[in-house]
Image (cartoon, rainbow over all chains, first blue to last red; front, side):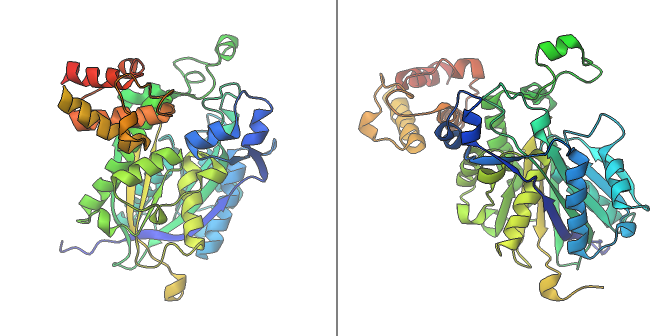
Length: 340
Length: 77
């Protein structure tokens, strides 16, 4: 194309995982389950649980502060805050506005984005549009969850799978040979019933009956979601690569949503991608929903697994049903000297 | 029939990492071949893709033995 586009990229990252660790062994004290059962079906050994005084915005604010610091960006420089969460502090106002206030991001617009566990990737895709269009210079995208507040602790099929956490990235323009090369967003509302929290909205307002019937908790059809997730993960990756004119062989590192090691391994096998090039931290965090991709991404960066110029694919899938992908030519400002 | 059985057997050997001689029509996925619930979902997905089928959850739940999987494929191809 003749017109030089503004390339958006990630220029800073920060995460926060609550201090309290809940192991599979801890769960066996209150549930009919075992470490072996949970680990063999999910790859999860332990997860983090927010302290009683911590809500989603509290986790988000710490992750955002760390991301801003990593990027060397002041809160007043942020033009837009996108908070991806399924567990907002309350139905309204938006958690993004609570985060905006606490950060002191006085010049920023702020909104929440609801796309299940895919929310962080959706947020990244949306944020990139603002930068490429020139309507925002600095976008903060944060995925933050307190899943522990919405799971049914008596349902051993779901409660063992989730954890709490937050992760944020600062997005800005990057050199034209770096940054987001392609993206995709997918949805299939016909599968919405497979992963939902039925009560508490306008269809079924919370009442003593909905509480008694346990409708104010996350519900999941594990088999259907598993099938969807494997295919969505592969489709999302293949699609962003196709849009950039690349193939599976060009992937240097894949950061998938950390829902279940079996989903990740199955999809990686189908993509013929060795697990050395796939981020995995579900063993220590469980499924932290929108926080999982930034948590895994930061770990990969710090572990030296992602270098400047690498083709990095981020893939999310979740309630909605939704799935999405981002293909990023990784930009490491620190290895290239600080940009202006 | 023999061909479908052989192809289903190959999928089971690949997915469950079992010996081909253990994959008999009367073998139970869970009790004899050591499959867990997600192994069965993965098997169902592999069958769907190999034989170009859609196996609804309610049908998948009724497939417990190797022979039942082969029969399902034969009935729905």
